[in-house]
Length: 188
Image (spheres, rainbow, N blue to C red):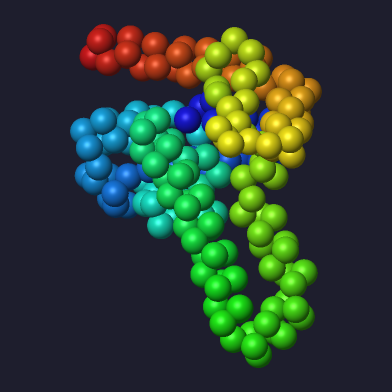
């Protein structure tokens, strides 16, 4: 969570990123034991934690950073990718089936192209692998030249933003805070 927030600040330029925890409900008591334990920890961290977010919230802009385990996060990303592809396929099919819709589609072509570009994973290049001693961008397995070019651009932006050192500092601050809290609790 802290690493994602640091990345959002330094690379994406979001001054106070909203951090959400992926769960199957908004309530604190929802989710697996691991999710509930993560929720309790995230509430204690010095970040803008907004609580649990559900799968339906992922594309709604409620959170700038979404924390999840690797499996759930990967399923969420692949589901969103598949949904976008399905919607574009359905739209193309319905436009082809209706002559009047084809005329309307010609008028809306710039808008359709803009939406398709926003939904195109290649435009984003890849996602950062945070917590390693260097900048690592994970690109999609089927990345082409455009996706790789954008992955390199994302890596350059992370290097220029000094994101590795920022994350190192953020983690050290959190460790110090948690250590102080544990000492206070053990003395009580």
